[in-house]
Length: 608
Image (tube, rainbow, N blue to C red):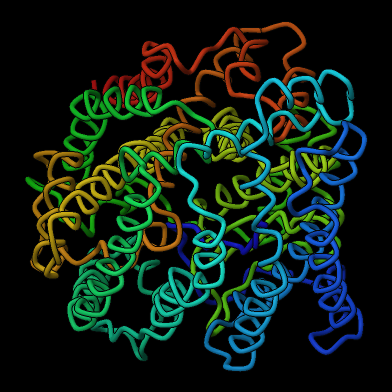
C-alpha cells in the first residue's frame, strides 16, 4: 500500500509578495476541514476495507480465477485511493506550514492511523509474487481487464528476489513511521525553522529568502548570503550528519536483508529502468563536464570580469541583465501562451490550476521550501506548490510544475495503480513545458543582449538540471558506499561533497570556506535517495524529444499526448518508440547534451 506524500523538490528560491494576487490552495476538493466528518468517515472505511480485504483474500490468491483476481486488484486499488486521499490532505496542509504544531500533529496522527490500517494489506504483494509464472500468464490471457494491470504486476514481481518473510515485511511496514519518515520530518522541521542573519539585511531571513539572495544582482549581497548559509549549516552540521548516517545505515540494513546488489538498485527497480541505462546517462554527463559546465563557467567568469568565480557567482545574473520582476499575471500569461502555441489542449488543461485553487504560490512563514506538483489521487486532481518571487527563473519553475500537473491530469485516466509515472519519465512534461516557455521567450527577444541573457539563463538551468544533479547522484553513491564501511563524521561527508563539486563545476571556481557543508540542505538526499538522476534523465529525454518536434516529426502532438496519458502503463522503450528514440542506446544521451553544447557555442560566437 502506498502512502503518498508530497515531496519538496530541490532548488527553488522564495519569499515575499507584491507580485499581484498570488493564489492559495483550496484543499476542500480533498476534505472540507481536518475535523470534517468526511475525513473521519474515510479513515473508518480504510480500517474496515483493509481488514475485510485481508479476510477475503489472504492465503487464497492462488485459488482465484481471472475474474476474482481482477475484483481483488480493483478493491486493492480502491483502498489505495482512500489512503492516498487521506495522506495527501494531511501532507499538503503540513507543507503549507511545517512549523505549525497542530498541522504536524495532524499529519503524524494520520500517518500512524493509515500505517496501522494498511498493515493487513502487506500480504498482498508478497503472496502475489509467489504465484506461479505459468498460472499467472494463463489468468492474464483469460481476462483483458486483468491483463491491463500487467505493468503493475511486472513491477511487483521485479521485487520477488528481494522480498522478505511475511512477518518481517509486516514489521518493516509498522516500523516505518519511526524510521525514515520520522527522520524526514525532523529534517523538514529543522530546515523550516532555520533563520539566517545576512550581513546588511535588516532582519533574519528563512532558508528560501537566503537562497534567493544567491541570485541577487549585487555581488556583496550574494557573498553575505553564502556566508550566512555556511555559518548556520556549520552550526547544525552534526544534526544533519546524524540524519544522513542514520538513513544511509537503515537503507544498508534493508538492502542487505533484501539482497539488493547495490544501494541504487531499489530506485532503479521502482523507476522500471535498467541500471546500465542510468550508468550510460551518468557516464555521458560526466564525460561532457569539460564541454558543458567547465566551458560555460569560464565564459561567465569572463563576462563578470573575474579571474575566478566564487560559489555565490554560480547563479548570479549577468552584468548585462536588467533586473526584472515578473508579476503573477504576466507569468501566467507567458506560460499559458507557450503551452497554447504548442497545442491549445495544453493551455486548457493548465487553466483550472490558476482558477480553482490548485496552486499555492506565495511565500509564507513555515511553508515548505522549493516547488512540487503532487498528484494526490486520480479521483481528485494535482496540487502545485511554488515559492513565487517574481524572478524570470520563477516563471520557468511555474512552467515546470504545471507540466507535472498536466501530465498527472492526463495520466489519471489510467486509474490509481497505473497512473504513476516512473521517475525516469516523470520529468518529461515538466521539462518540456520549460522548453516551450523558453523558446517562446527566445523567439520574442528584441536585442542581442536579451537573447544572450535568455540563452545564458537556459544554459545555467540545464547545467543545474543535468550536471549538478549527476554530481548529486555521484555524491549519494559515494556517501552510501562510505557509510557501508562505518560511521561518517561531518568532515567525511564534507569531503565527499567537495570531491564531486570540484569535478563537476571545473577550474573556473574557487570554493569558499564553509561551502563544504552545502550538502546539508538538499532534501532529495533525505526524502528520496538516488532520485536526482531523474532530472538529468528528463532533461536529456526532452532535448531529444524537442529536436524531434522541431524537426517536424509527423503527428508529434498526438504522440506526445498519448505518451503522457499512458502514465506508468508502459515501459520507457515502448513510450519512446513512436518518436524514434531509445534511451538504452548510449548515443541517445549525447543528443541531449549536444543541445546544451550548441547553446554554449552560440554564446561563445557572440563574444566574437
